[in-house]
Image (cartoon, rainbow, N blue to C red; front, side, top):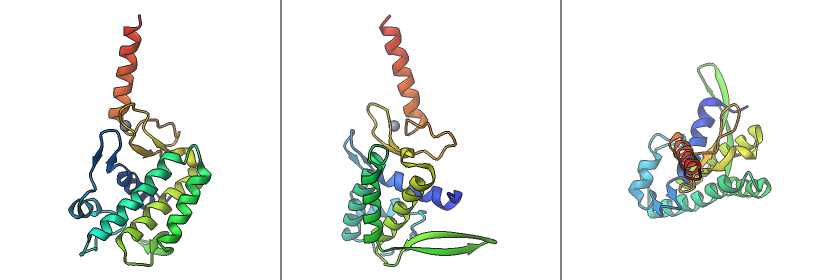
Length: 184
Ligand SMILES: [Zn+2]
């Protein structure tokens, strides 16, 4: 079962990390240590990294490649996505931890290192792994918007998401309407 609060925010962190790169527009929102610090504020992987360096930035950018590859390929090639996830989890020294708060118990995956990227890897990769394990690999995807290519994870009940946002879905339906009218 997906733990609603923690896993959902870890899933969102994975998607947000992948989407700091906009491949079609060629925009990259993770080019400086300051941008990395801003990205990490309020994230479940923790924000107590007082000394982020260029090395952390390089490691997180490498992690982004893995996260994006998993999100892009899981539906078509779940075996490859699983191999990427397992390799990343092993390299980040991901460790399950049992937590207790307000009469509730849950497990969380963290890294037993103090490397920022390793902790972010343990959080994001384990969240994607649990989505695949509970809802299936088709829940990971890439926006069908022709000029978008943002990634998403569909945690909805019916699992029919095709677009990253309502904005993209609306743009596509307007374009389809115009092309129908135009072809008359
Ligand atoms: Zn989109």
